[in-house]
Amino acid sequence: MPEHGVTGERQSISREIAELARMVVDVGRCVVLTGAGISTESGIPDFRSPGTGLWTQVDPMEILSATAFRTKPEAFYQFILRLCDSLRAAESNDGHRAIARLEEMGLIDVVVTQNIDGLHQRAGSRNVLEVHGHLRTGTCVKCRRSYDMGFVLDVVRRGSLPRCDACKGLIKPDVVLFEDPLPVDFVLAQQAVIESDLLIAVGSSLEVAPVCYLPGLASRLAIVNLMPTSYDSRAQVVIHARAGLALAALAEAVRLESGGNSHSEQEDSRNSPGDIE
Image (cartoon, rainbow, N blue to C red; front, side, top):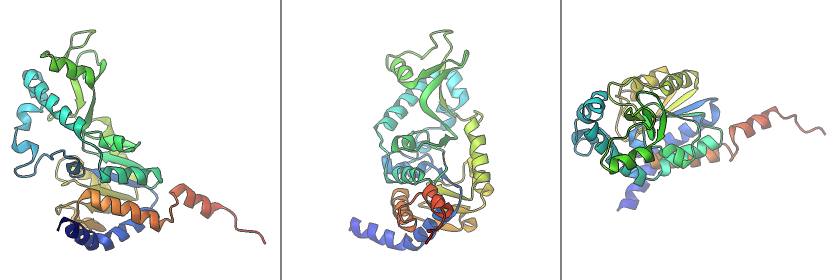
């Protein structure tokens, strides 16, 4: 029964996949924007799904805001510890790997992600903009000295608050909390989308500001998401399917469409002189 369901899902999206594959091969600059939906297949819960979303279990302003970090650092760090442990246990899935393959072929220029799990990098993606930060490092709030999160979490496990060796300031994870300004990666993401020929939004509800404004900057838009979004009517291609399934199929369709060649190889072929008889 499950295999039949997957087969049916593949058949229902095959035309859209083929159309998107042609777009990816033909355009010049392609940017991918990913949200929590690409990582749920790695066992990481999203934030807003009824019953399973992280924010149905805790109040984000009470635990993951800049105010919570300042006023309740012990509770904040206990939550961060549990979150980091769950992220560390997760592995990149077919969706992450497909994006990395397309980037390696020279068909994706930039990956913009709302996720803080680092799974794109672990799958092999190199040019990743993390608009909500990450949990690889932390920074002293006083002197700005940087620390590996392994050090920070070891301190928390011992029942203490992580403080800077130099100035004793509290170390804050390099993740964007509620009430925090967005990092420079968001400015770079805006520019990347403006300069792109195609934006593919994957696994995102496209409802969280200000990231939800990025699709409006794109000249052409494709959406891969299990549920409908408010941008569906503006997109050239919409694929309602699981991210891993759709992206794996897309990577294969692109390989066939391009004849296995990368963008650079296609450019070399077009620019090379013809045979001289």
